[in-house]
Length: 89
Image (tube, rainbow, N blue to C red; front, side, top):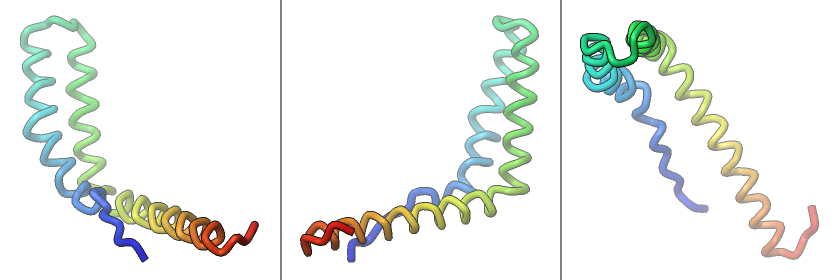
C-alpha cells in the first residue's frame, strides 16, 4: 500500500493565517491607492469574509476533502490491483 501525503491537512490553519497576513493587507493597500476604484472595497470584503468562513468552517471542509482524497486513493488502488491481476472489474 502506498502512503499518501495530504497537504490539505494543515489548510484549515494556514489559510486564515495567509488571508490575515498577506491577502487582507494587500487588499487594504489596493483600497488605499484607489487603483481599482470601488472594486477594492469588494476585494477587501471578500478577503475578510473568506478568512472568517475558514475560521468557522475550515476544519469541516478539510475533513470532507480528506475523506474524498481517501476514497479516490482506494479506487486508484483497486484499479491497480485489477490491472496487475488481469481482472476487468
